[in-house]
Image (cartoon, rainbow, N blue to C red):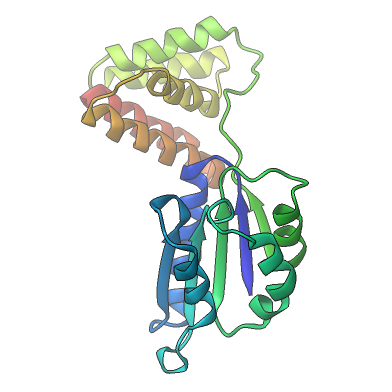
Length: 220
């Protein structure tokens, strides 16, 4: 069987790949995993060889194939001829293509034959009813306040009707707009992405998730 991930959001794509790995390892702890990234200058024969020549003695394998469509001559022809073999293989395949376009032959073949298709969409600041300048003002206070004072900032944001997701989006935008960020800022940007994922998966505890992020920023 194989899965097809597409889209430019590397964070979401890699997070999904990590989830797939964990899922398969729970089912089979001796599962072998092989990752191949087409952007790292891998030779086409190495990729095709890995797919075709998995050893019977090695047991099942999980292949993570990242951005290989552009680096493999004739990849669409390979898919057209071998899609059924991939689907019926004892091995598992995950294809992630960052820059593939809908409507291309390779995209259509992967979409048609994959057991599951998922898009890693780019994150955008959502449209909100609260004036944008109010959100930016609150985010500025989150970065300027220290310690528990930042909790008061979040309380004011709730009174203004600003939802946690919008604050997290603007906090991440604050890091993204910089041409260079420090190692500490990179760590906070990663925490912001995690907070965004937690808000999507756990809306009941959104206040706690946002407070944890804001306190991390205030301590930096």
